[in-house]
Image (cartoon, rainbow, N blue to C red; front, side):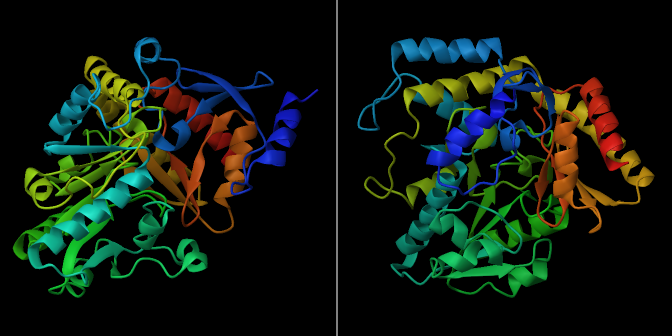
Length: 398
């Protein structure tokens, strides 16, 4: 008897149908493997969409959360508590930015960043007609503000009118950004590496050029590191490889490695001239439980030397995917950095069908825009796991 069917039927009776879920029911995880209710094992190269950086069932991480549950889970932000300072200090140190606001998700982090940019501009001239430049093919979330800066017509169309004052430039085209800048421009927002839109890394000259433009015009640069950050590309945040520091950065996903937490982080200059008491808030954001998780994540990144590990295994994964690209004519190209990788497939090989075949063979991969096979595994994978993945993927592509 397939135990999954009962769970699926019960779930579909009560949940709003906004996801077309794969027809498996996951029950537990260990290391880089997931297990469904029928006992089948899957090599996980999705990590809950780049969330489970430390894999599954890490003992130190679990113990930190168990201990915090026994102490205190929630207080609201009307009070101080004992875990938020350490979590915020570690995030600030890792980013080189001074002020942290914890949220519940990446989307909420984008909302906060947009508000901070608008308030910063308002504080300068008292005007409400400021504009933000975002990128085509970007993805920043599905709330109304985050959707407004998401450069995808299909996501936006049913929910218009969205917030105004948003213009879209071409990613990696500096001249297209310059063409949109005017005296009302208050911010440029982009992913350092576009994820959902098809795994497009920013070019060095582009990102550095945008930063220079922002500095010259006192425009805030907002970098979305929700998917590409927290070590996934070999540096703690992807922008650090480009030597371009944002004025505001958003993060989430692997920040808490499974608990719902995000953050937007900003320079002291922006903090001093933007959000003040009463301008922004959250009931759950930065509560004792999630901050205990964030703090332990940073500790484990350092203890396990995650960044060095990603640099080594990421280079090996890149090499193996390049060889796979040469071997199969259905693969158009490989794109990505570190452990954020995409294989672009030709139209006659739909990425969704490859994902389904991989699931049957015990491998979890996901898709991204433009018929791309996306790989965002736990950061603890080894070369042996890469070899196992390649073997299964070769079989499925054949």
